[in-house]
Image (cartoon, rainbow, N blue to C red; front, top):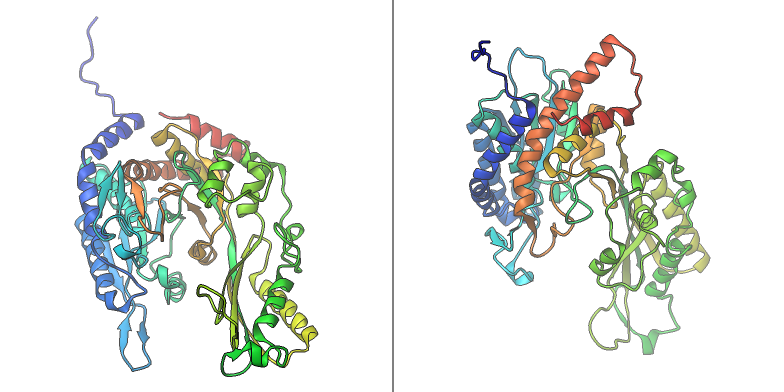
Amino acid sequence: MTQNTGDVQPPTKADLFREARELITSNAQVYINRLAEAVAIQSVSTDLSKRNACFQMADLLNQWIEDLGGKSEKVLVGFQELDDGQRFDLPPVILAEFKEEGKEKPTVLVYGHYDVQPANKADGWSSDPFTLTEKNEMLYGRGSTDDKGPILAWLWAIEVYREMELELPVNIKFCLEGMEESNSECLADLLHRESRSDGFLVGVNYIVITDNYWITTNRPCLTYGTRGVASFECEVRGGSQALHSGVYGGCIAEPMTDLIQLLAAVSNGGHGNIDISGCRKEDCEPLDDDEKDLYEGISFDTDQFRKEAGNVPSLVGDTATEVLMNRWRYPSLSFHGIEGAYSGHGLKTIIPGSVIGKFSMRLVPGQDSKKVEEEVEKVLRERFSQLKSSNELRITSSSSEAWLANPKSPLYQAGASALLKVHGIRPDFTREGGSIPITGTLQKILKVETMLLPLGASDDGAHSENEKIGKKNYIQAVHTLFVLLEEIDRIHQTMGKQNVSQPRKKGALGRLKDIWYGLS
């Protein structure tokens, strides 16, 4: 019997993933050095004195993208004008693309932001916030996890394909902005414009955002929902100056007294519920069996969560599931401060001339944010009329909608499969208690599947002192995104074949199991 030595078997997906992991591991220090280069650029969008740094960061990303063979454009979207007439251009939005001409592939849009929060060592940082510092396998620096590290992980995943001389399995488009920490000024207008006719966003099949975090430090997750937010300022204005309570106490309607009554009216109902039409727990979408199943097995330590909150005496909720539901499924009310009130040490017997109460409500799917604004203002004005106060009441508010995706959708199947293959563990399916407005905005404009894929851990401290990303998280992020592109291509092809050849006989959960355990 003669052996056929001429047949060479093509590498399997498992072989490619293993080769990619080895290449990524060997390049780890290169990736860290590049992150250090990005962190060193103080792209603080809220500080006009650092506006040039925002442009510098955009230039660096633009150069890296072009070096990898992508087409990149820095789009100016507007300017800020100060009272003295000075104008400052807004940082550009980077619209970049990696596409193989003449080949039909699914297109994935990646959103991220390259601006960061302000940071000063004097604020409590243990190291220079703009010098990436490695300590105990953690990489400390402003922007390391929010959002420069995740953006760079996408680029290095593409670079791995290039180094392995592999064709990208999907087309990739990037929308990278420099004003996310400043309310994404002018971004929505650009997105609407680029979604029309032959605009940059036409043809996108999937959206992936990596600008959020796990709910633990050791288990990956996929996020399928975020709460919205309605923010309020309630101003009660009396006279033009602060007064002595010994002289005027009892003689005037005091603004602070009015404000306390108004805040109490909003919070009627106590912890865990808000007694305002449209804002009660019973106004939320009903909990069905499929959603209940998503809470089973979620890795969440309530006692650790309590300690992370500053050792609060207790949490609202008797079980981990109840706490999680209160954290992201139900609306909540928080008071943030009173502007104009005395806040120094010691007793003070002044009467403020005017005060502003600041509070917000976290909203969930099923709530109309504009109607919530209207209902809250109605409650405030009704209570104020009951006080028969001679003071003036002013109310201002703004809001963004909640967002909810289908965790059994094909895109989430691809994400779950990628995380399982890289981390060796099935991810949790979670929601966020906070708000990421761009998620709903993009999904509403493009009307395609959208997924939040966290890469950082729960204790990364985005926006806080000593922000960091785990060295392991950062390197594994590159591998996760490398695998994700393959998984999106696979699920896209599978869905296409099902649509053409036969009706779907399996439910989404069945397909999910096929992909999770089909590791070849």
